[in-house]
Image 1: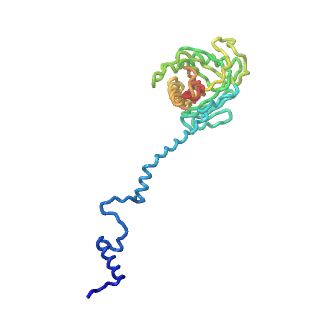
Image 2: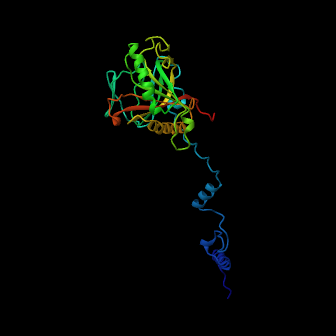
Image 3: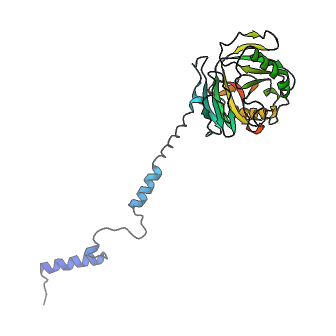
Length: 300
């Protein structure tokens, strides 16, 4: 007897046979990669890494601007001052030292100046401090010499004292000493052996006291009006000897080397001696100074 398969059953049988021959199942009908094939897709992590490597390197941020120069380095702080005006700017050394004003007198620790300064003169620089100072025009009586400056008290002091006594000029402070060619004798870090010449000067309180010119009785004493001058100054305390002045001058030279916007006008130096023999040496107040000018930034 011949058995016939129903059409629906035959179709199912044919489908199962086809799938079996392909080694698959209904769930495996979606194509898949073989075990050895390379996956063409990329994980999110790898994609970010590749993008970062391909992106250009951003430029470095700009350097922060240089701090602004101090006003006394950016421009001449003394420009435009009248001949009778003085001015002081602290620029180095002991930046916190303060001078006490007591009427016409000045005090700093055990140091004291109780003789009036010429009208318009700036306050004395405290020991250990460095200042830029502008001095006004001043009338001065001076005596010149070439022997050791430490001998000047014998050769110049009494002729000057007699001069102001004859003219009834009150004593002022400081006594000024100018040292010619002192700086040319400085060899590296060694003190100079001494200046080639010097002037000792007593200062008049005002420029309208008495005439200028040679003293009527001693031609070695000459009265003149010194022009305004800008200096870099260092305060000192102790005995009045040239060695102390030259030590301070070396420190002023170092300050100029570190601040090239300022330069020395010449090879000279000067010192201010504020006290007389009535003060103990350790309490005596003085200053060493170099005449300077503002030259700005030479690199421009």
